[in-house]
Length: 278
Ligand code: NAD
Image 1 (cartoon, rainbow, N blue to C red):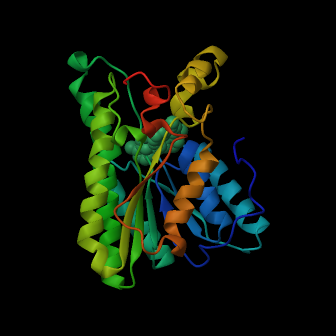
Image 2: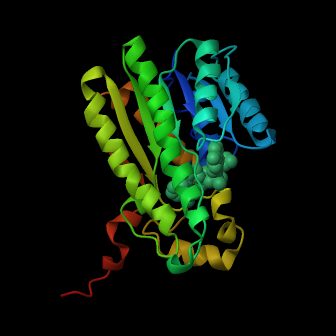
């Protein structure tokens, strides 16, 4: 069964931490913002476009903090297109002038489009790489500059995917962006390990969020998806958020440069469940 309500049993490992979650107006980003707040962090909820979703996340984060006895916490919303250098610069200025510090960056914003690779519109290709990969780079640069200037370390957690290592035909730009996450995570981890800065990634499998609206609400299509997952079910955003909270916490103090897959076994070559090769 999904561990959807473990809110009373998890710890408060992030008290005093200030965290930015990109793309937090819905889906995994929202669940991460709420989970970090539940564990005591103050969160900046980044959003693109209209503010309604982010406002809902903000209200849920406030309730989460209050419900766990963390009191009045200065959660904020910050609008920015993570693919825009100017927007990202302004977002960090807003956050740092208000809080004076940041401890954790969660690079979660992302999207995908399906197209036969030979017909993939180059502007769509560029936009996916710009948001999913270059956006993470732009935000990481800002966070790292701050971590280095203030000393004392920090952490970056990238939202990658099982498609960091599993090819996704028909989603060329998405596959490339998530493959790039591997070396983004590992290169920065190595470069900054000596300065107390940890850089990791989470690789979700098939998770019940709006990005998967094409099948989540259709029992037949959903059945096809779950038939491919060794654990026999789709994951919840809360299960992914729990991994982010772990990696942000001191429980992961000796972990850097890793991608932790939370995918119900999708990365285990499910085709080999039953022997066919020998
Ligand atoms: P989602 O569509 O629900 O959420 C994506 C969020 O990113 C939205 O809030 C959207 O507004 C935001 N966003 C998109 N472009 C942006 C931009 N330019 N600037 C700022 N924000 C932007 O999808 P999700 O499933 O919650 O996806 C979150 C992350 O998880 C993505 O990086 C996605 O690739 C990854 N992921 C999801 C799954 C899954 O099955 N849901 C699996 C593996 C990885």
